[in-house]
Image (cartoon, rainbow, N blue to C red; front, side, top):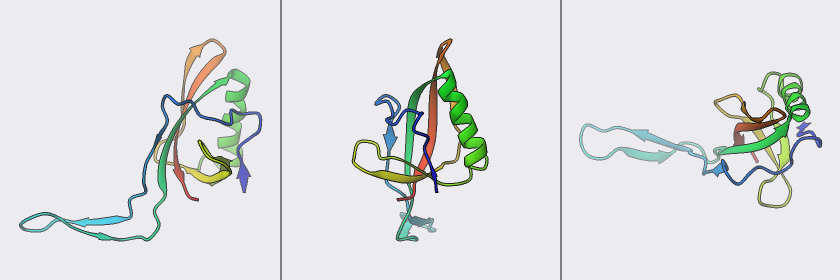
Length: 117
């Protein structure tokens, strides 16, 4: 199992943090009235969006981690749990990580994750 590098930030910023419940429902439209809703899966990954500040060296480490260790972003990895004890197993979600400059040596990195456990 790949592990989030110790040289990268271990906690996300409060600004940009979004968590939710996994959606294991199946919705079916009907000819009349409301949609039928039933449980499709007993387990559904939870969505999680994080924002972290990284310096240029950390950003390079992060890029290498995603491209190399995570096979271009397809493999799961272990990250410190945010706001609780322990670790989570996560995987990159629908969008790949993005970053934008805060200053010349500081970057804001946005992660779209799925919490698997």
